[in-house]
Amino acid sequence: MEIRSTEQGDAVVLSVKGEIEVYSLPEFSRMAEGYLGGPQTLILDLDGLEYIDSSGLGFLVTLHERMERKGQKLRLTNLRNHVGRVFKITRLDQILDIQPEEAPAS
Image (cartoon, rainbow, N blue to C red; front, side, top):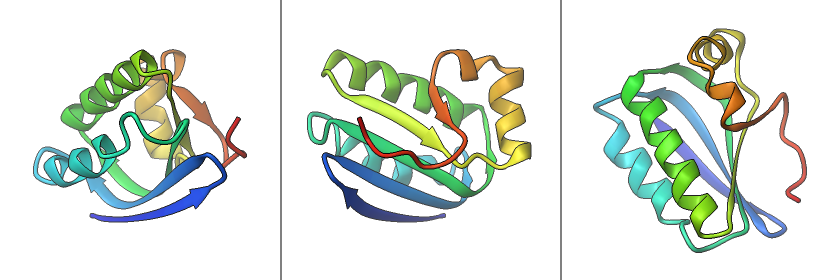
């Protein structure tokens, strides 16, 4: 897994390439949790995400809840069709802020 971080106004964009699964989750969670209490919005650009397992999905829900408690937003963007279907099947698209493409932070 490869993660690239860029700043966009009062937001940070993490571009994820590869897989978020049980073996890569510790690295991903360390990086994402590093922004708790930081920028107003954390945008996960998932255009390069090829696969996500249940541990990755669970982490995103937990991260979303923790960020909400701190007054922050988590936004997911650029989900490929096969990855987007996972979020629809699990109904996480009704819980998480998922945008078709990277939108400016607001």
